[in-house]
Structures are given as C-alpha cells and as structure tokens.
Length: 170
Image: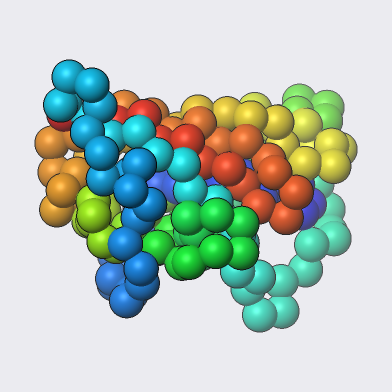
C-alpha cells in the first residue's frame, strides 16, 4: 500500500487551499527564465509527511477508494524547504495488480518564483511494486508567478524522495 500512496503529487480540483509557509527562495536556476523568456525549468525534491496513524498495510485498493498525502518540497535532498504540496487521489479502475488513480494536487512554492500550481494525472500503478515508476503530471493552473503557466511535472522516485522536474511555459 505504501507504493500506491507515494505517487508524488498532484501534486496537484478537490484539494484544500494550502497556506504559504516561510521558506528559502528557490534555487537560482528556478528563477532563471528559459532561453526564450517564456517559462521556468527547475527541479525540486518531495518528501512525504506521514499522516498520524496511517496504516500502510491493508487490503488492495478498490474502485472508489480515495487517499490523500502531503509532501514538503526541497531545493535538494535534505536541503532548504521551499514549499509543500497536498494531493488527493481516487481509484477509478483495478485489474489484477494494476490500479488507475486520478490524482489532483496543489503545490505551494515560496521565493522566486512563488505562488501555487495545480496539476493532475490519471496514472496506472503496479500495486505489488516496491515503488511507483516515473510519471508526468499536467499543470492545470497557477497563481502568483505561475498564474499564466502550463506544462508538466516529471515525477521520478529517488530513494526516500520524489524528484520533481518542472517544465513550465507561459
């Protein structure tokens, strides 16, 4: 069940608004514009914040099950915190060891650039796997410095973290 819950984001409709936290600004590469001045590209690392009393064992997911999780976001593994996210997922299909989940999340980023991003994905996961494979989230909206962006976030497992490569255009 742990691998099913740890899908990185969503992160980012149906997620409660997340208040900004005080943190260090994003790395210099995050505030640098793309060559044509129309976007941002940067990498962050997400570390899940375990929910109190969360039970990672249990029956396999079934259609209609939902789960939520939250991550702290860092410039580097164990580095300065630059934000957080909140994600909600619903199981929409199961077949053998496969489960399709529709996940929506909100990312709150502080510093330059700063604001909120929303993203979503319909992703198939192998329930029996140790961890999820890489997947992409579609950026669906934003606020602050991200109010006119679109793009995607590539999420890749990286030890106790999820590597999140942001590819955003204006």
